[in-house]
Length: 263
Image (cartoon, rainbow, N blue to C red; front, side):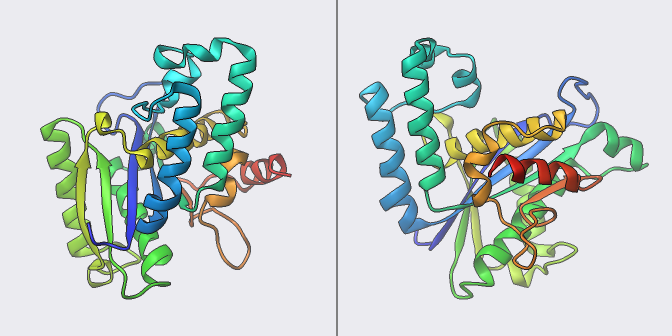
Protein backbone atom coordinates (compact mmCIF):
# COMPACT_ATOMS: atom_id res chain seq x y z
CA UNK A 1 0.00 0.00 0.00
CA UNK A 2 1.41 3.35 -1.02
CA UNK A 3 -1.56 5.45 0.08
CA UNK A 4 -0.84 8.17 2.62
CA UNK A 5 -4.07 7.54 4.57
CA UNK A 6 -5.94 4.46 5.76
CA UNK A 7 -9.60 4.19 6.73
CA UNK A 8 -10.53 1.16 8.84
CA UNK A 9 -14.20 0.08 8.94
CA UNK A 10 -16.16 -2.03 11.38
CA UNK A 11 -19.86 -2.56 11.98
CA UNK A 12 -22.31 -3.49 14.70
CA UNK A 13 -25.78 -4.90 14.26
CA UNK A 14 -27.48 -6.47 11.25
CA UNK A 15 -28.02 -4.36 8.13
CA UNK A 16 -31.07 -6.36 7.01
CA UNK A 17 -34.41 -4.54 7.14
CA UNK A 18 -36.44 -7.74 6.87
CA UNK A 19 -35.87 -8.91 10.43
CA UNK A 20 -35.35 -6.29 13.13
CA UNK A 21 -34.09 -7.33 16.56
CA UNK A 22 -36.14 -5.24 18.97
CA UNK A 23 -33.37 -5.53 21.57
CA UNK A 24 -30.77 -4.14 19.16
CA UNK A 25 -32.71 -2.50 16.28
CA UNK A 26 -29.78 -0.70 14.72
CA UNK A 27 -27.02 -1.00 12.19
CA UNK A 28 -23.96 1.18 12.67
CA UNK A 29 -20.71 1.63 10.80
CA UNK A 30 -17.62 3.14 12.39
CA UNK A 31 -14.44 4.38 10.75
CA UNK A 32 -10.95 5.27 11.92
CA UNK A 33 -9.09 7.72 9.65
CA UNK A 34 -5.32 7.90 10.08
CA UNK A 35 -2.10 8.62 8.29
CA UNK A 36 -0.39 5.45 7.13
CA UNK A 37 2.89 6.48 8.78
CA UNK A 38 1.11 7.18 12.07
CA UNK A 39 -0.51 3.79 11.93
CA UNK A 40 2.79 1.99 11.35
CA UNK A 41 5.02 4.05 13.62
CA UNK A 42 2.73 5.10 16.48
CA UNK A 43 -0.60 3.29 16.67
CA UNK A 44 0.59 -0.27 16.07
CA UNK A 45 3.52 0.00 18.52
CA UNK A 46 1.21 1.44 21.21
CA UNK A 47 -1.28 -1.41 20.94
CA UNK A 48 1.36 -4.10 20.52
CA UNK A 49 3.09 -2.89 23.68
CA UNK A 50 -0.25 -2.98 25.48
CA UNK A 51 -0.86 -6.57 24.33
CA UNK A 52 2.60 -7.70 25.39
CA UNK A 53 2.13 -6.11 28.80
CA UNK A 54 -0.97 -8.20 29.56
CA UNK A 55 -0.64 -11.27 27.33
CA UNK A 56 3.08 -11.55 26.47
CA UNK A 57 2.26 -11.68 22.75
CA UNK A 58 0.75 -9.46 20.06
CA UNK A 59 -1.51 -12.14 18.59
CA UNK A 60 -4.46 -11.02 20.71
CA UNK A 61 -7.66 -9.66 19.17
CA UNK A 62 -9.21 -6.89 21.26
CA UNK A 63 -12.86 -7.77 20.76
CA UNK A 64 -15.23 -5.59 22.75
CA UNK A 65 -17.73 -8.39 23.43
CA UNK A 66 -15.05 -10.70 24.84
CA UNK A 67 -13.64 -7.88 26.96
CA UNK A 68 -17.06 -6.94 28.36
CA UNK A 69 -17.78 -10.56 29.28
CA UNK A 70 -14.23 -11.30 30.56
CA UNK A 71 -14.10 -14.42 28.40
CA UNK A 72 -11.44 -16.25 26.38
CA UNK A 73 -8.08 -14.48 26.81
CA UNK A 74 -9.81 -11.77 28.81
CA UNK A 75 -10.68 -13.98 31.77
CA UNK A 76 -7.75 -12.20 33.44
CA UNK A 77 -10.22 -9.32 33.91
CA UNK A 78 -12.01 -11.31 36.58
CA UNK A 79 -9.23 -10.03 38.84
CA UNK A 80 -10.23 -6.53 39.96
CA UNK A 81 -6.67 -5.14 40.12
CA UNK A 82 -5.78 -6.52 36.70
CA UNK A 83 -9.06 -5.19 35.29
CA UNK A 84 -8.42 -1.66 36.57
CA UNK A 85 -4.87 -1.61 35.21
CA UNK A 86 -6.01 -3.14 31.91
CA UNK A 87 -8.61 -0.44 31.25
CA UNK A 88 -6.28 2.33 32.37
CA UNK A 89 -3.67 1.21 29.83
CA UNK A 90 -6.21 0.49 27.09
CA UNK A 91 -7.91 3.86 27.50
CA UNK A 92 -4.54 5.55 27.33
CA UNK A 93 -3.67 3.76 24.08
CA UNK A 94 -7.05 4.70 22.55
CA UNK A 95 -6.93 8.34 23.66
CA UNK A 96 -3.27 8.97 22.77
CA UNK A 97 -3.30 7.41 19.29
CA UNK A 98 -3.42 9.87 16.34
CA UNK A 99 -6.64 9.31 14.39
CA UNK A 100 -10.11 10.68 13.68
CA UNK A 101 -13.30 8.72 14.23
CA UNK A 102 -16.70 8.88 12.53
CA UNK A 103 -19.87 6.98 13.29
CA UNK A 104 -23.03 6.44 11.24
CA UNK A 105 -26.10 4.62 12.55
CA UNK A 106 -29.48 3.59 11.16
CA UNK A 107 -32.36 3.09 13.57
CA UNK A 108 -34.03 0.37 11.52
CA UNK A 109 -37.45 0.52 13.17
CA UNK A 110 -37.74 4.29 12.73
CA UNK A 111 -36.20 4.04 9.26
CA UNK A 112 -38.79 1.55 8.00
CA UNK A 113 -41.62 3.49 9.66
CA UNK A 114 -40.51 6.74 8.01
CA UNK A 115 -40.01 5.63 4.40
CA UNK A 116 -42.14 3.52 2.07
CA UNK A 117 -39.02 2.30 0.26
CA UNK A 118 -36.17 2.80 2.79
CA UNK A 119 -32.56 2.85 1.64
CA UNK A 120 -30.31 -0.01 2.64
CA UNK A 121 -28.51 0.78 5.92
CA UNK A 122 -25.15 -0.14 4.38
CA UNK A 123 -25.69 2.37 1.55
CA UNK A 124 -26.56 5.17 3.96
CA UNK A 125 -23.79 4.58 6.47
CA UNK A 126 -21.00 3.90 3.98
CA UNK A 127 -21.92 6.98 1.93
CA UNK A 128 -21.59 9.12 5.05
CA UNK A 129 -18.26 7.53 6.01
CA UNK A 130 -16.88 8.09 2.50
CA UNK A 131 -18.06 11.72 2.56
CA UNK A 132 -16.17 12.24 5.82
CA UNK A 133 -12.96 11.05 4.16
CA UNK A 134 -13.37 13.87 1.63
CA UNK A 135 -13.56 16.51 4.37
CA UNK A 136 -11.03 14.94 6.74
CA UNK A 137 -8.43 13.98 4.16
CA UNK A 138 -8.89 15.40 0.68
CA UNK A 139 -9.79 18.94 1.73
CA UNK A 140 -6.67 19.15 3.90
CA UNK A 141 -4.32 17.05 1.75
CA UNK A 142 -5.56 17.43 -1.86
CA UNK A 143 -2.75 15.32 -3.34
CA UNK A 144 -3.04 12.44 -0.87
CA UNK A 145 -4.64 9.08 -1.55
CA UNK A 146 -6.46 6.84 0.90
CA UNK A 147 -7.44 3.19 1.06
CA UNK A 148 -10.46 1.73 2.86
CA UNK A 149 -9.97 -1.51 4.80
CA UNK A 150 -12.94 -3.59 5.98
CA UNK A 151 -13.03 -6.68 8.13
CA UNK A 152 -13.73 -9.64 5.86
CA UNK A 153 -17.05 -11.49 6.21
CA UNK A 154 -18.21 -14.24 3.86
CA UNK A 155 -17.76 -13.98 0.09
CA UNK A 156 -21.30 -12.76 -0.54
CA UNK A 157 -21.12 -10.05 2.15
CA UNK A 158 -17.75 -8.85 0.84
CA UNK A 159 -19.06 -8.76 -2.72
CA UNK A 160 -22.13 -6.76 -1.70
CA UNK A 161 -20.10 -4.24 0.30
CA UNK A 162 -17.60 -3.86 -2.55
CA UNK A 163 -20.47 -3.20 -4.95
CA UNK A 164 -21.90 -0.46 -2.70
CA UNK A 165 -18.42 1.04 -2.30
CA UNK A 166 -17.79 1.13 -6.06
CA UNK A 167 -21.21 2.65 -6.75
CA UNK A 168 -20.71 5.46 -4.22
CA UNK A 169 -17.15 6.05 -5.43
CA UNK A 170 -18.39 6.34 -9.03
CA UNK A 171 -21.62 8.28 -8.50
CA UNK A 172 -20.79 10.29 -5.40
CA UNK A 173 -23.35 11.25 -2.77
CA UNK A 174 -25.78 14.07 -2.13
CA UNK A 175 -22.91 16.24 -0.92
CA UNK A 176 -19.77 14.95 -2.68
CA UNK A 177 -19.38 14.11 -6.38
CA UNK A 178 -17.80 10.98 -7.78
CA UNK A 179 -14.84 12.98 -9.09
CA UNK A 180 -14.27 14.33 -5.59
CA UNK A 181 -13.94 10.75 -4.31
CA UNK A 182 -11.30 9.71 -6.83
CA UNK A 183 -8.60 10.06 -4.16
CA UNK A 184 -10.02 6.89 -2.55
CA UNK A 185 -8.11 4.11 -4.30
CA UNK A 186 -9.77 0.88 -3.22
CA UNK A 187 -11.47 -1.21 -0.55
CA UNK A 188 -9.54 -4.18 0.86
CA UNK A 189 -10.84 -7.01 3.03
CA UNK A 190 -8.77 -8.40 5.90
CA UNK A 191 -9.86 -11.27 8.12
CA UNK A 192 -10.22 -10.82 11.88
CA UNK A 193 -7.52 -13.46 12.37
CA UNK A 194 -4.98 -11.17 10.71
CA UNK A 195 -5.18 -9.10 13.88
CA UNK A 196 -5.33 -5.60 12.43
CA UNK A 197 -5.22 -3.08 15.28
CA UNK A 198 -7.18 -0.53 13.23
CA UNK A 199 -10.27 -2.72 13.15
CA UNK A 200 -9.98 -3.42 16.86
CA UNK A 201 -9.87 0.29 17.69
CA UNK A 202 -13.02 0.86 15.64
CA UNK A 203 -14.75 -2.05 17.39
CA UNK A 204 -13.82 -0.65 20.81
CA UNK A 205 -15.16 2.81 19.91
CA UNK A 206 -18.22 1.70 17.95
CA UNK A 207 -20.16 -0.27 20.56
CA UNK A 208 -20.15 2.47 23.26
CA UNK A 209 -21.61 4.99 20.80
CA UNK A 210 -24.25 2.50 19.69
CA UNK A 211 -25.23 1.89 23.32
CA UNK A 212 -25.26 5.63 23.95
CA UNK A 213 -27.80 6.04 21.16
CA UNK A 214 -29.95 3.10 22.30
CA UNK A 215 -30.06 4.04 25.98
CA UNK A 216 -30.06 7.82 25.42
CA UNK A 217 -27.35 8.00 28.07
CA UNK A 218 -23.61 8.50 27.66
CA UNK A 219 -21.72 5.21 27.83
CA UNK A 220 -18.75 5.60 30.22
CA UNK A 221 -16.23 4.71 27.48
CA UNK A 222 -17.24 7.47 25.06
CA UNK A 223 -15.39 10.31 26.88
CA UNK A 224 -12.13 8.35 26.40
CA UNK A 225 -12.12 9.07 22.65
CA UNK A 226 -14.72 11.82 22.22
CA UNK A 227 -12.03 14.29 21.15
CA UNK A 228 -11.20 11.96 18.22
CA UNK A 229 -14.71 12.31 16.73
CA UNK A 230 -14.83 14.68 13.75
CA UNK A 231 -16.66 17.90 14.67
CA UNK A 232 -17.92 21.08 13.08
CA UNK A 233 -14.87 23.40 13.08
CA UNK A 234 -17.10 26.40 13.79
CA UNK A 235 -19.13 25.27 16.80
CA UNK A 236 -17.49 21.99 17.85
CA UNK A 237 -20.63 19.87 17.35
CA UNK A 238 -20.23 16.29 16.06
CA UNK A 239 -23.83 16.18 14.78
CA UNK A 240 -23.73 15.57 11.03
CA UNK A 241 -19.92 15.73 11.06
CA UNK A 242 -18.55 12.74 13.00
CA UNK A 243 -21.88 11.37 14.19
CA UNK A 244 -24.79 10.79 11.82
CA UNK A 245 -27.91 8.88 12.77
CA UNK A 246 -30.77 8.02 10.40
CA UNK A 247 -33.59 8.87 9.94
CA UNK A 248 -33.18 11.60 12.59
CA UNK A 249 -30.05 13.27 13.93
CA UNK A 250 -28.82 12.30 17.37
CA UNK A 251 -30.32 14.73 19.88
CA UNK A 252 -28.33 17.81 20.89
CA UNK A 253 -29.30 17.06 24.51
CA UNK A 254 -27.54 13.70 24.36
CA UNK A 255 -24.47 15.32 22.80
CA UNK A 256 -24.43 17.85 25.66
CA UNK A 257 -24.60 14.98 28.16
CA UNK A 258 -21.61 13.35 26.43
CA UNK A 259 -19.67 16.60 26.55
CA UNK A 260 -20.50 17.09 30.23
CA UNK A 261 -19.16 13.58 30.90
CA UNK A 262 -15.87 14.61 29.29
CA UNK A 263 -15.28 17.45 31.77
